[in-house]
Every structure is written in C-alpha cells, then in structure tokens.
Length: 294
Ligand SMILES: [Zn+2]
Image 1 (cartoon, rainbow, N blue to C red):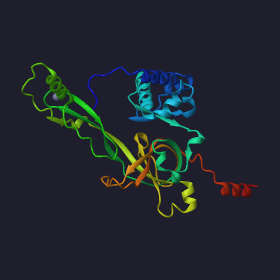
Image 2 (tube, rainbow, N blue to C red):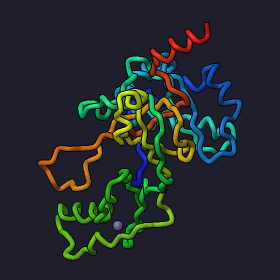
Image 3 (cartoon, rainbow, N blue to C red):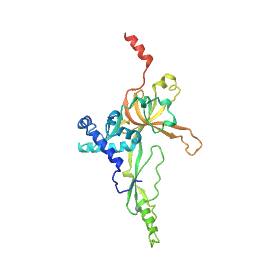
Image 4 (cartoon, protein in one colour):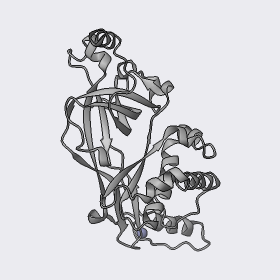
C-alpha cells in the first residue's frame, strides 16, 4: 500500500536516476530525443541499446540485478525529458540488442530460469484479443478521506483491501496513549474509486521457436505464451518472426490450492520486441541457398 506522503528516493535510486540522466543527455540519445519520437502517441517505446547501459556508471549491472526498479527510475527520467520537450507521450524504455549469452531456446526453458531476462527467437502462431487489465486500483477511506493506490498483479485476483491505514494507525497509536479513547470508528469503511483505476492493455501471443518448427514440437501443438504490453499490443500477427527480450515467468496452473501439484506453466513477460529473428541460424537452408546462388 502506497503511503500518501512522498518520500525522497534513497541513495541507490538517486544514483540510478543520475546514471539514466547522463545516458539520456549523451549526444546519441539527446539527438534521438530532439527528434521528438512518438510525439502525439499516448505511449511510445524508446529503444536503448544494451551495450550503452554499460557506459553509465554500472547501469547495466543494476539493470541486470534489479530490472524493475532500475527501469522505474529510467522511465521517470525519460518522462522528464519528454515533458521538457513539451510532449505528453508516456515513454517507456525498451532495452534492445541483448548480448549473445542471453540468447535462449524457448523450448529448453526450465523452472530455474524464472525471473531471468533472456532473448528468444519466436514465430507467432496466434494472438489473443487485446485485454485491459486493472494495473493500479485506487481506494479511499470514507471516514478520513485518505486515498491510496494498490499495484495489482497480472492474471491474479484483485488484491484485498480491508482497512484504511491512516485510521488504523490512529487507533494503534491511541492504544499506546495514557488515556485511550474508548470508542473508534471501524477503519474498514472504504471504497474503490473506480474512475481513478488505471487499466493497461495487454495481449497474449502464442509463439514457437524455429527449432520447434524443425523438430515437430510445433506440429504437436506445443507453443509458449508471451505477454506484451503498451505499444506492442495489437502490433503482431500470425507468422511474424520476432526477437523477444523477456523475463521468464511462471504461472501456476488453474487450481492453485493444490499445494502438492508442482506443475506450473512457464510464460514470457516481454520487455522489448524486435522485428526479425536474431539468433537462429538455418544451417542447411543457408548452404543450399548459397549453392543455388553460385
Ligand atoms: Zn481513514
């Protein structure tokens, strides 16, 4: 639960913010930004080269070790850059061109790979409808008018919000007082502020790897699910060949109460998507092509 009082970013975040600032103010990225990319779009994926991260005070290490908070800082700085250029677009950092040592065959993923950011070659076999999911819900207390937001989780039941923290804190601190009040209103009189809830578009893509096409797994109907966000939603169609830079995630099967059932489903949470395959080398076809050319 987010408290109402804003807090100063801690030391780590300060240095991360500073590194991103240096990156976006470097010649290359400053020029990119001066071209006002995505101007007029509600959301725009701003591409940053993986290798460039290494040049700004350990940003690459930070990104590897703590991707979401590093991106959170970066997106904040990038948004400032857009605002400075009078653009209302919401930019999102998309790190691209991940190194070879992160290239991975999707059908060889294991549970131990969860949370890793890896890069996959994929061919789209089907796409889901576009789904709006509740990303952030907003709640308010009907007694004290406190308002707070809750970050929801994708494909999970909504977080339960049971009481107002402010009212509860007052009750708790009053219990320590010398003369506690005998009566308090229940801190549970809260409601959701539906019009301030934030929804995000997502889409699920079913993909297979080129290897799965060759070895018959694809023919058997096996595929992997990729979830894409924001500007990637609605962009792809069956047959598209993509390089997908994604965090490996695990979705429990439908009945999560089955504690002893350890079967779980791996899916990919896309961070960035590049057109075309990057890692797949079609050895045989390449050589036959060369032969026919010569
Ligand atoms: Zn309250």
